[in-house]
Length: 260
Image 1 (cartoon, rainbow, N blue to C red):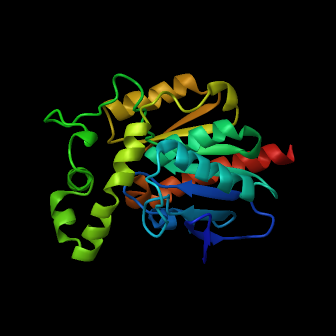
Image 2: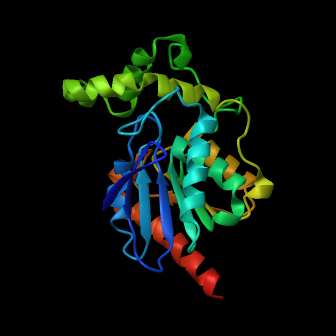
């Protein structure tokens, strides 16, 4: 894997000649490296991972809003879509960003995969915790700790090295900003998403995540629903082989469509 910095974003990539390209987009409080176990199973594709602005090794500058992340991805797509099919794969909020970017440059995208993309502009999407708090109701570092305890587990969060915890806490403003500004209306248009979109969910994810999958299936013209057995939200970590199969199947479909 080659590493580079482009537009202040830390990028990792593997290039194969004459191969379709996959761009991975991570979710909240995550890193591009979360996809490595999936990407390495894409043996017939080029791929690119990156730390989104404000996370990991990518420069922050001004605190990015949701639309800034969309603009970053559009710039990446513009650079990478000059010599073959491009598929964008987004996990969690990365999936929402992927749909928004694909809606802006639809002719540059051959397909999209989203896993449990949140829909926070809808009135039924939960934005409060069990105590009624919203992210913006507390200090960003406290919001990070609460999110990490909920998603990774209290024991895992507490066992992280102090330097890692400190860095994650420093990413609080970026996390709060993107999640709050993502509520500002649907960021993508169904009319502009004419490419196939795989709408993925883990079989253990129910409630609002299952409802969100159905909303996207009903909304998107070419939605391809799939459920990853035994998985929940963090499918790229828990079931990388199964998730890579989902991506590979879309790549095969895209390649067959190109040659027909």
